[in-house]
Length: 294
Image 1 (cartoon, rainbow, N blue to C red):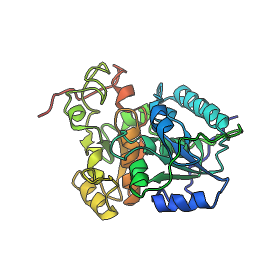
Image 2 (spheres, one colour):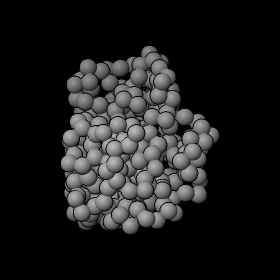
Image 3 (tube, rainbow, N blue to C red):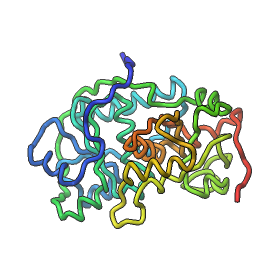
């Protein structure tokens, strides 16, 4: 039976460097599992030794932000994790190619793992490109892992439901933070994939905009999150402080997860509306601000 419990953080470093990950590999710890969130094609070419490929963390779309949708998500990933031999008690390290290229996919994976009940989750700062820059070992070998039973302990309070977001629209005490790319925020496109991927373009009413790229050194050779002081200063420009209650959304919860982690590094708590615009725009009973902005 799936049981829910209040979310409690465990003292595991959320962002780790390639050197720190190398030390974990050198220890040959059976409790450490590295998850590659890139495409199967990229993984097959080369990857970090002993890493396993789970692209579903990025490709899975939440049906809806109601109990049935969350239950389906939980069961889907519990089956995958069991198949690849993860119980949930391990230290999990996730990575993507680069933090500004995969629409936040490693952060989405880390967020989902924590939501499912994994207490020890870290993200490779700088992604696979940072690993390659350090000229660390890579391989094309796929590790063999025995199946196990993944223990679900979902943390419901990490997610913002559609009802909660709807109730928050006219509540100025809750900041509705849109972190999508500029053309989506302006109402020129419904998604990062195609302008008409979703039936409606626009924004959740009364949202403020902070493009996710701004919280990273996106123009650097190896993009990483900005310093906590820089993140706090950027957030203050849209009225967010360490005391704010923040609901973040994007298209499907990936860029929102990336931004949530950046805020967390700066001491700002936030929750992820994981269904995001992909869900909100498809329900015509939900209000939107459909003006095309300049």
